[in-house]
Length: 373
Image 1 (spheres, rainbow, N blue to C red):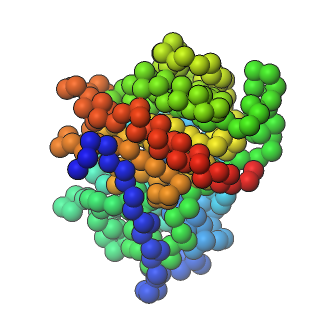
Image 2: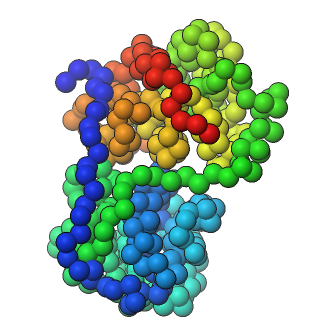
């Protein structure tokens, strides 16, 4: 395999239901979905949420997630209610707030779910947690040989495949039709108006712009800042305005990128909320980023992207549309990597060169206007 591989794979065809549903729509008036993960993981679950909503149109759908996801739940079509999960020992996504756990379980039990769907991974810890919520029926994923509350409604945890497709296997176990694999990131005009007030001069750059997102939650998943800077300079030399995006906590990474650049850029790091970031990506001609949540936002909004994947499982997390989203990566025996800091020489990042990323970006930009806002 070449040092930097481009992943090009067609999306898996939709599943066609042939069996009767395990639970008729009339049996489910209170529906819960447990997925207490981060933004990219949540967006990958949207197609499954959409299918559950379509299968049980009269049900009140409660999303159980980490506290940050309350705002997302308010926007997602078909989600009626949100219940914050305080974390649990052994689940790495958040520091558990054990003092809040009794109240969480009480709140979950008071909702009297007719069906609670566990979409929080293999189920080794999440199935016992879901069982404590007191639902009449439980569905989800299970690791063979582990605790399974209701075997007829559970699917074996998939060991391979894209996350979007993997999650929809629970629909197959329930005998429900899939409704496609498209992601959603619901924006409104107020988000675009608010973004327009964030620009340094009150308006977006003329002639279009490219978003550069150099951050990622794990340092091992970050392509080097100096390489992002080299790509930014190449794009700026071709006449594109470069906009740095990221959180307040990633401003240090942005400063590294700017210090290594020869051209000027527009620094929007830490200056947007989640929805303004979405509007920023929506308006861009291209996003260049690590394999992180903003990649899924671009996929949901139809903005072209070039993604450098350092350490991630590319077949599981890369955008499904391989024409609009170009993923560059280097195959190593240690992928996928869960280290905060690479214990070796960060070979997966170093193998992807600025020239390769810049060429991929310019090719995507050459495709012209890809969507109308």
